[in-house]
Image (cartoon, rainbow, N blue to C red; front, side, top):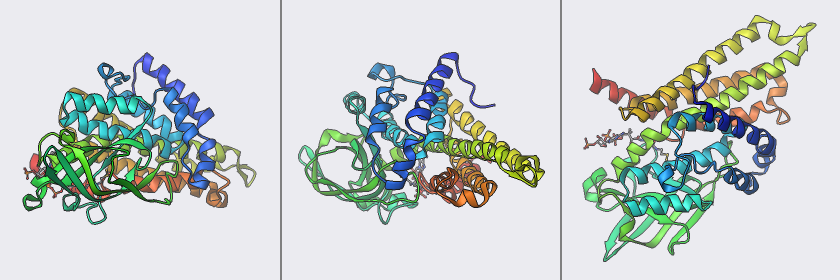
Length: 379
Ligand code: COS
């Protein structure tokens, strides 16, 4: 089972697997320990064009289909979830721009990424997490500029991206209809970075605050029209949640593979522990959940590719994938026993990495709100 991809994509997946096995998997351990930004890994990955998977060919990218991207991101997440996330989040900003941007904005965004920079997507604020509409960052029109003031938090790729999609209120009196989205480039005066999060997991990815203090950007950096920011953000999340699901599958798959390898070698009562049904059934349950989560991701990708509605399926892929990653990694730690709890073995990192997949890109509780809202409209 797995994703059903073309022969060409299979070759690319194999090349990514090779790269991840040699350049990411072992190296990520040290970066996980120190929390440093693994620049050398990212530089090599960019040589492989892993930052260009989702950029359309017409804009200089690889223009891969959604299923192929999911399969590649899963491979990357198997090696290191933070590594995969950095590239996946860079694609999120891209989605907003392709949904609402002008030709010039699309080109600028793609050129920035192709030149070897990441992008970021900044919606969350200290008081606006699940309640994304409660953002307080403002953007005031001033001649042919907008002036941004406020703070975004928990921004993946914050401090290492070259360009960001940032939501801000252009008219607070209108509620969500007063939210707009903008492109803000690294280095713009008045735009600085706040504290860097010292995270439990995905430590190979960078997360920090973005601070806007009278940050002046050209009016042409407005994405779409004023007031369209909330819709753009929600539609962007509709896409990105599928890919969060696929990375969660990658974490779970790696945990299962590690548990099988260990369970075959670990001898207790004179035989490998996998020959006990108590362990073998845990593995079977892992596989049932992983493959189910993977096929939900695949289904959401297919709907996207066909231009059919996918918001509900994407939320299911994210929520189910995140829950599966947490359950499977926890069971993998259980199979490793005391060794599973030690940093010497790989599964405790996988469990730490998995946890955030139930939280970010909309908590799994919020995904259930999204799914329920769809159901109430459907039936
Ligand atoms: N696509 C297009 N439009 C959408 C949409 C979507 N997926 N979701 C909501 N909207 C529109 C609705 O149609 C509605 O428009 P109208 O007022 O014209 O009818 C409007 O947005 C408000 O919708 P709703 O009332 O459902 O919004 P809420 O404020 O109740 O918020 C949730 C809905 C909770 C689903 C939303 O705030 C959310 O997703 N929160 C989590 C945010 C998140 O994921 N944060 C993590 C970011 S990590 S980068």
